[in-house]
Image 1 (spheres, rainbow, N blue to C red):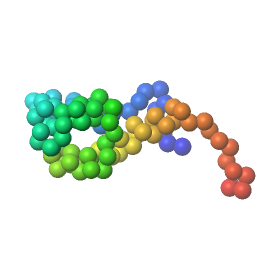
Image 2 (image 1 turned 120 degrees about the vertical axis):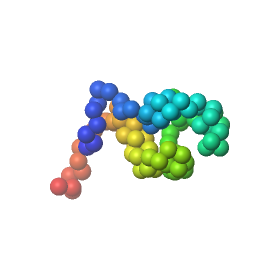
Image 3 (image 1 turned 30 degrees about the horizontal axis):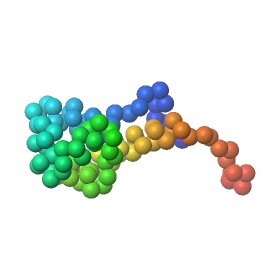
Image 4 (image 1 turned 180 degrees about the vertical axis):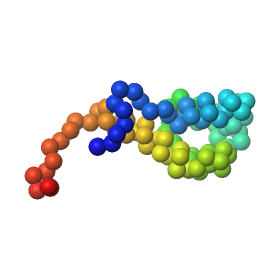
Amino acid sequence: MPTLPSHQPPVTPGEILSEEFLKPLGITQAEFAQHLGWTTTKLNQIIRGKRAITPATALALEDALGMSADFWLNAQLKCDMWQALQKHKRLQRHPKVS
């Protein structure tokens, strides 16, 4: 079972993007979206956690910011796993599996 805290969700990749990159660097969402060739809506949805980081998105962020695509995908995976754990109902291990 993953060792994610169950009481508090992990920081989303969008929050990391906004708080650790865009705001400190003084880059607006519109400016960054244009640089990436995205719509501002797409970027805003990522920042608000309404759109997931895909492999293609992660590669674009790696190119633009220098943080590896794996970093962005792992941040997304932590969020996805936390959400799944909130809904997960534990099952008994199958009797033929030791």
